[in-house]
Image (cartoon, rainbow, N blue to C red; front, side, top):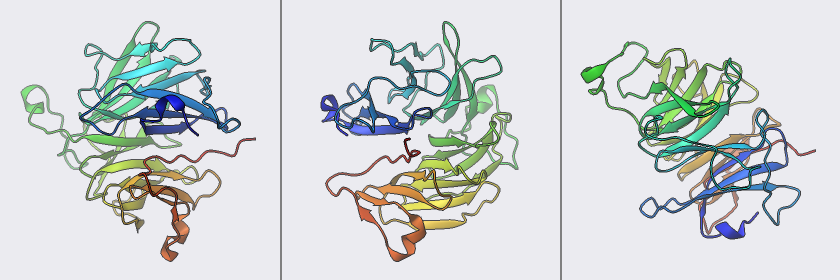
Length: 308
């Protein structure tokens, strides 16, 4: 799949449409952080790989795409509208992040039937954004302080709060059955289990990785099981009620992303900076890896349901 307008840009995000199994969206930008330029979003269909589609239907809110930017802004686009302008955009007054936004993700509508999504940033905030009629409202769900743990109730305020350093957030994922639970990975490698109901402390902390945790993904089959992928070359399998990893896989290179297969509880794919794809980690002990692209790093992977 190629978008002619974005040949010189890098793929920075990738996601499947939850309502139409053949549609997926791709974000284009740059990982050369000293030379930032405009990005782009393209929507593709498996039925026509030669050209991007221009319509993406989200499960509950047709055509809406949430986007996080390197400058800390979050945007919402309605790509049915024939305009490049977002329908919502965060500002400093509306709680804009002060550092790069690394992930955004939609959640179920709130009790007032308002659409909402979450973001995580290097500024140490996990933030909920609610789409109201005329504005984008924000609530900081948790601030990722280094010293927060289940045994210490840190609720600093005013000048005291400034003493607590914030850990940069990289990724998050919500529990499939409990909407208030989520795990978040950080730049230091730690992983934290959190709740939207308790913003003063973590429910549990995992000494996940020695370097930045790039991805965390809950299993679609076992609700308490999740995967993590890291710059320390490893993918790890966790039970979110246990502090030690169940399994660890060394892929000999920085792991940019990991995704569960939708058809099997024991199959997932991981991609590395060396351009290797490990499509079935049940076979990892036999060294089964596919070299999918040796000229470029592979940065993203997403496994979708089979299109009917």
